[in-house]
Length: 399
Image (tube, rainbow, N blue to C red):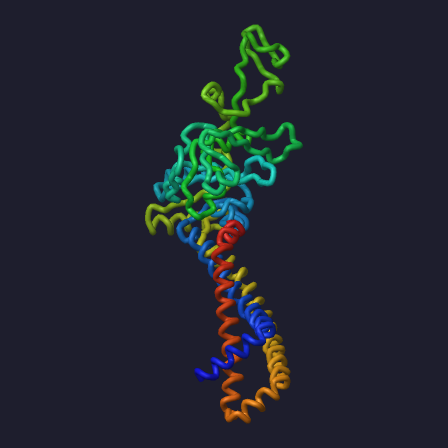
């Protein structure tokens, strides 16, 4: 066989154009299912890892998958809102820690760069996800924010910069105003969705939504054109001409206030971290009734359902790959058959030189084996390289 492989190698090199065409055709046929399989395995690992570290998620009743993707990856819109009272109820019950999430706004888009989600949460979130700052510090005051590493790189941000939120409806003049936030820190890379968003506290998110605001003080020196009424007791009522502050700084921070009961302020989701396994069961039981407006989901189970649907794509690719493989084998057989006919004189010469028919057959088998090995190796190398170099793209696609 050693001599057969030597002669097969020389023959393939002499006909390298034909050999390269066959290798590429076989490599594509083998590489397509291999690459899809490897990419889907990475997809499964990436999407399952975050879900497995999140015990429970509370949210408005509706699509369980939308709620899970919203709370875990910040992109999907929440089915509806719940209130701060739901988080307080869980905390007061001593069953666990309630981490509020308010994700309804994005930063303003820049030329060539889309806006990123603004996540309003509490300091417990950073402890829960083990997030630390590479520069600066976590937000401590109203109007402060901290950005993920990828977000900072994409938007060109550094500590001390200003970041502007985008109104949900730019045509609604009576709607929410953009708020300019102060960047106090840049998070270390965690290779997770946290790298691609802006974090602030829930109160700042409520200010962006218009629930809280600050405006210039109304007093005797205020322009009369800005007053709706001014009675004899100096009870002054401002009109809509007094615009709210669009930036929170040391000079105007004390003027910001909220209207209404804070327990009724909106949240889009709550990460529930049970104090124990017993507490986890109790939390699940509390929200098991389908009549309640709040649902409690187990992220690993929901993501498993999602993966079940996603991996049906792999089955389709397998069917297509089998069909492509059959066609490739038939074409390969045709090419080899024609090659044998063209090389009939060569084979006859080898036979006359003393080569047995078995040796000639081994020579043909050696050529086929070399083509298969080369095509298989090329397919696996190309698949591995695609998954490795496309890891960031796959992560962005997921998150």
